[in-house]
Image (tube, rainbow, N blue to C red):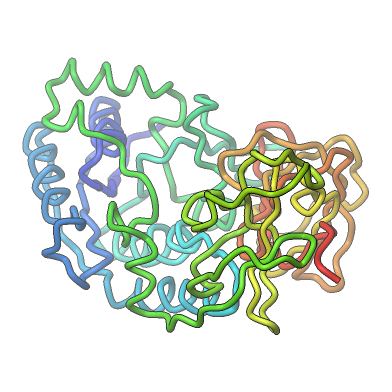
Length: 378
């Protein structure tokens, strides 16, 4: 690889820090860029952006590179957060990290880096990019560490974005990244990985969402139509949710479909028209199983979808922490939709989440789930 000017997104975490160090070791001219994407309650106990900036600046000092602080909060609120709220208001469960990557980290950040004279950008994502000479295309591949692979969150990136992007730690296991960070004495070598939605941080999710969405309490019912309690608003629940239902003490007489009388309860359906939250008992309840799904707003890394009907050759994830599931791709109603058929039922397929398609290690793209064939109340 020829050396070039690379602008690295330094988040304050260890992955981006090691990415910057690796690129400098390879002889690239490296510049760090810290993105501030959220300003509301920035001084609260839950928001870590101030400490993240300090950590990123310290990393840049140790590595010996310049770093710039850029505020993308306005773009984030307009392109990501507005969609996030709209989806929750509609009863769906969005994945803002997918949209943040497509709209901020690989659009606003990429544009800014190009204005700085960058040849490429780099981030600390666990993924890989390679050029396929036969197809003359750039491919997005899973990171080599199966426990850290983040290609799911990057599936909306296009050819132009990927052609300008490097993922230095995508070839490494997380343990090696930590080892390198300690060896070169990076100040954040043992820093805890960030989890959850970036702008919510460690704060209670329901409390945060309640600032922006109105509560409309309603009934909680089971699959027999029996009232078990009251929910605080359908927007505050997601399919498959087990905790925070407020019905842990409910005891039923005898077993119910999919579970026994002491099995946990899970959210299985949200009836928006009647404002009813349906819950079922048992992880394997039929209402939590789907063999087909339809998705819209599809985005394909190659610029066009793979051939439909590739049964047994493709696989998909319907949520991030999920093993690949063999599936068949069918044509959707139009060019921006798709339908997936699974030989093995998938658990808690959730509208608003992303269905991401793979051919082995190659991430092909995906779409936003809007329906599935799991049974629902009549």
